[in-house]
Length: 478
Image (cartoon, rainbow, N blue to C red; front, side, top):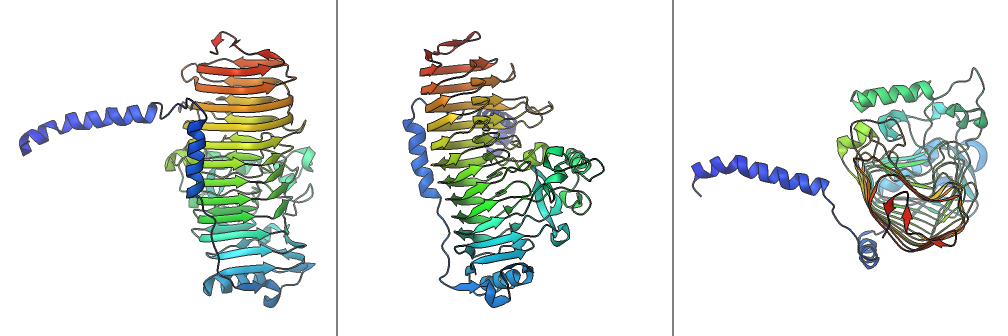
């Protein structure tokens, strides 16, 4: 083709590429036809996720002047130990038995913060101890209090051992900022409502996140652990209690392993693990008993999620136990960047205070595509609301239609269900697509299936309240 003809053909080529991109962006990426396909994908994912390895060198915080008496503030000792470890090529910063009071910790590359038996890191209740850092709060970027353990742009970091991270939150400290009387708030006390509303406005206006400054006097609670834009992360073995807000919130991270972690708190918004816009995440052998979602997979709220357009991608949840919580395995609601390739296998759930088993929550203010969600071999004692719950109307509507597609649930066994077996509330313009349930037995629910808008729903050997499910509200199942 000569140059003149080539130039003349450019508009046609550009249009063809646009059409192709649009089809790929909006079209179905995959539809599983058997569990063999996602199980093969899981095995490939296992090979991609590798926990970081650290230099065989220890730095005991006591050698840097720390005192484990529960009252001496050890922020500087922790800082010196972490910086020394990092400067010498990495290793373990060892926290021995004792109760070690401290302000927030900044975790540097190649450092493994290791808690020995009977070691407790007790975080300060004084907001003045918490520096202002670049963070996300409920999926929105801003300058706010540092997480109790924070890192930004670091690589090869870990929190390990058999000790305890105590966020030191209760109805007298942190939790009452939520503004609800159930958590200690009383008339005349400060609360987060005004600042939260302001942050929403700044996000919608696309104000530079570094000019969205909060912190002192604004009452937006910090999370316990937030690595931001980091790679190669390990959280292993520790117990976590009484976080001011979310426990674990890796943001824009890659290659994350969370294993054998015990998470317990009944405060407001005390989610257990909320990986946000992360890629290649393994959560295994963990225990969650929380005041909000046990595991909630996220990718940013509204404008801040769409700005990056980075989905939560390639997450494997296995052999975990969930007790109290708004949901066991949750996707959303801060999910504007989308989510894909989310797998949950061999988990157990059981609590009258557990609302849902699999929960997908989004809205048209979020948009985004949630696809390729696989759940298999899940044993449930009881729950309160729904076993499988898809809701596109979680918050106020907007102009970004969400998509939910290719959801596979197999070998779900529920002893005593709650309000619904399966609940789907979707837009007529964007029905939930390709929902498949295979070999599931759900007992004791009030309403077996409630679906308004869905396309290509298939149920194979699904029994609810002793009856095989074939139809629901005019939706053909098979």
